[in-house]
Length: 315
Image 1 (cartoon, rainbow, N blue to C red):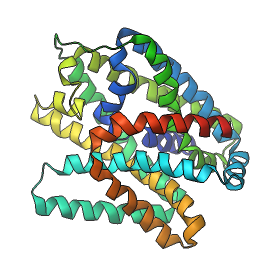
Image 2: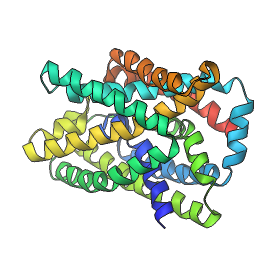
Image 3: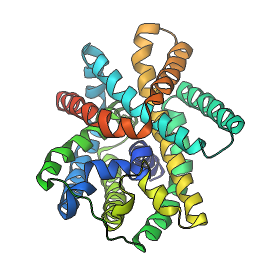
């Protein structure tokens, strides 16, 4: 079962990035569509289950297809760079609370950590997520519980039927780039282990998506914030620190997974492990200068559409 939980937390760690943990991604893809968004959350997590199971049980086939299909590389690069840049932008937003000297010191440490874990590969990703995610899950529950205890009269809602389009886009965005990672860890799992890993992963995502969506619908006054959950938590110093930690860990775990995916793509061109790792970390760091909110609001939907094409092709 340890192997199953390692995979569950690896998958969960790739989904719970800055957009998810901060609430911004949940707002863009679900909450703004109103009450029907809870149905979209259920549909999304059902799709997550089937896609996770497919990648875990068809890993060798997926990896061969990625290797032998040249046009997938540029698509993968754009989607991964978009997602990876948003993680960097989210972390930079968090670091901005500190003095300038500490901001740049922490950013430097982050870059070194990303390069180190990327060089370590899948084993490094599994160990990091198995250590960080269980703690993060517990803290996230406390943060969302605080959010449920508050509410505002302000509401924000757009055309509810549009959510039917955004729902699969959300799933595509969060699975197309993890296809390589999930497929690789699935190579050493039995079908029974893959079934449990898929069920627990999608179930865990459902719980946090559902509660997070409920929190945002009840607190419309924070929806326009770059990080809604963090704005909501600002009412309580202890909860604010906990929310800050959850978003930071969520950003980091997703970031290193995406950096690893980018490294695989760049390695085909650079033919050097260290050089590919450096480019995979430094390039999205530069793109993150566009800003977290702008990347999530405008580039995520574009990347999602490309993600759908990639996902359909791989499936």
